[in-house]
Amino acid sequence: MPASNTLTLTILADLTDAQIAEAARAAGEPEWMIERREVAWRFFSESLPPIWKRTDLSKFQSENIAVPLGPQGTLVQWDAKLAEQGVIYTTLAAALRDHEALVKQYIGTAIDPLGHKFNALHAALWQDGIFLYVPKNVAVELPLQAIFTLADGSHSTFPHNLIIAERGASVTFVEEFASLDSEQQILASPATEIFVGDNAKVRFVSAQTWGKGVYHIGAQRARLGRDGAIEWIGLNLGGQVQHIEAEATLEGNGSRVDWVAATFADGTQSLLTAPMVRHIGTNAESHLNFKTVVDDSGYSTFDGMVKIDHSGQGTNSRLEEHAIHLSSASRSDSIPGLQIDANDVKAGHASTSGQIEEEQLFYMLSRGIKREEAIHMIVTGFFEPVLDRIPLEDLRERAAVLVEAKI
Image (cartoon, rainbow, N blue to C red; front, side, top):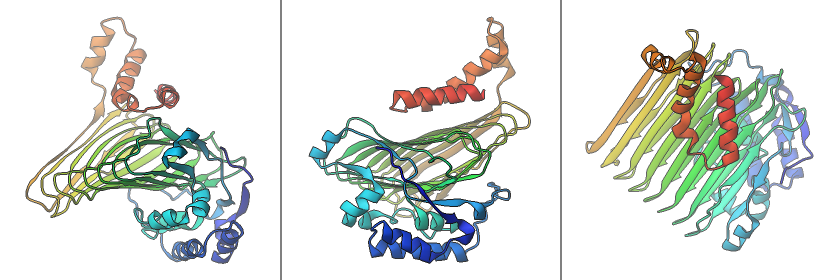
């Protein structure tokens, strides 16, 4: 059910907390949410931008970004029969009206709305987004998908997704960000909060395929209960600049995250992902395997970290990132890290980076495969373990086409 009737509030430089509050009241939002927006906006207005060494925002003119009031173009796809099992899948704006207590209980408790200037901007201005609630012991078999686009003429979007899987529940949620190319700067400021209950399972797919001109600056965080598990699949192909801070917090004993991602930066793209896993519960596991390809003057940054608290005894963790360079002008920074405060752990990290081996190309050329075709086969095979995990065939095929177009 796509949304419509998008209105433009004003550019960021002219916006005030009074205007934000007025718009929220006109939309029928409760006072506690209006107050949250006002507090967040004042924090945004008064704070300095975060210092990001590997994300260059010097050319980004955020003060000229026009802010939309109302949904941008959220497309919700699901089977309405799931409602008979108590599953709630709707827009976050509708959930704020119809399921206020649940929204109030969870929103802003995984991602700190005042963590930094961009978090606060999102908390003040979010409009789009999904609310997904799966009751105890309910298994949702078919993947649920939300597609975020841009309304005609819009230059910003602020979707917020709130995913809740109660004890023993299981669900697959796919978020996709897509648009045409733009000659003007566009700000996409998404946030996704995921709550995995005891013995619950969530498969989360986040696919970023924005067109040119988009600055994708957002946050994702999952909190896991006892024996909870999340399979996290990331795809980063589009946009001009990306800065995504993502975290899985293994709070419950026996919890687990299996995290894979594929990033391809070409042209003048600069794509950064900062995944972090925090081990709090005992006997928890985390396995991260990220794949990166850079070409032309593309720049990719993997800033990964595994933190094991003193309480995280019995941890089993592995953090890896592997990068392929297709041109001498491309660049990738790999910064895997471990911070260990427990003494009963099994943890390690690895990183590799380089061009395709000439010996490998020679082997393929000697068997009649052209050089361009050989490179194509190597790159697609490199990404295949990630793409194969995408549960939706149409998205998997579109992603494969985008990758092929970049090679």
